[in-house]
Amino acid sequence: MSAVAPVKDFLSILDLSAGELTRLIELAAQLKTDRRLGEQASTARALGGAHVAMLFEKPSLRTRSTFEIAIRELGGHPLHLPPEFANGAREPLEDIARNLERWVRALVIRTFAHEKARSVAAAAPTLHVINALSDAEHPCQALADILTLRERWGECRGRTLAYVGDGNNVATSLVHAAPQFGISVHLASPPGYTLPAAVIEETAPLARSGARVRRFTDPREAVAGVDAVYTDVWTSMGQEQEADVRRRMFQPYQVNSALMGVAALHALFMHCLPARRGEEVTVEVFESPASVVFDQAENRLHTQKALLLMLLS
Ligand code: CP
Ligand code: NVA
Image (cartoon, rainbow, N blue to C red):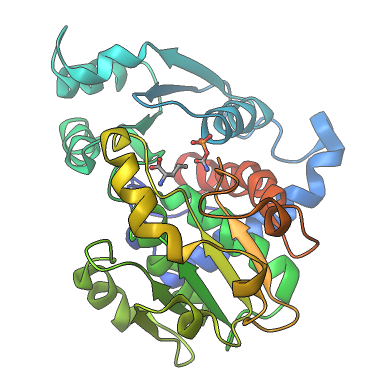
């Protein structure tokens, strides 16, 4: 299985070309099939005992667990660093990175300011740095989302997905990725919470097969006839003090049966998780046959394995 990409870091979906992204998704699908081989899988020792450091400044179930399992199943060793190291109080984060690069092959980092991940990557020229979510982007999530859509749809070209909710880190990476697979994206957010126009502009030249990203205010207009509806929490980690205001602003953007009823009959429901049932999505939609949220969660493992192989092996 050939997996080499000439990239050092994965801080953004935009760090990989459309061709590399396609190869990554194909590799992930293969790794998913091969997982049943366990130790007999051809990739079981691919990392050759390399260490991969993990620094998570915010809570995580999916990202942290799937990276740990991915590293182990590829024959590497995870090294967990205490979250408070990320605040730079004991020593600058750049110095931590310069230490780590003498011992480990990669650093998986979840932090607040995206700039922090960038400066860590710049400080350590031989350390592969992977963004496990920043306030600005969540590129690992978008990889799993694309694999999930590919599994459900076969061919992604010509499909349309509506993202209803906050124009946040998850929305940004989804908009970076989906058009590169020929998927159009309709965005519906309340005024003041829309995805920055710059995100749409930087992705437009990369779109394939005529895929377009369009912004809407009315969620029903955004969802009309689409093949999938995606949402995320209204209040992301670090925004807890805004929760009451956000709950009021986002109420008309709840994904419920009435809204799903406007989408195509076969439309999927997607969520990166964790979900707040009764807020951005109703229990009914979350638990419906349309919901592929646990496929997305499973696919975090396979896509991150593929990513580690592409960056490190
Ligand atoms: N979707 C996601 O990144 O989940 P965690 O915050 O649990 O890692
Ligand atoms: N937008 C959410 C995603 C969690 C996986 C957050 O940043 O908290």
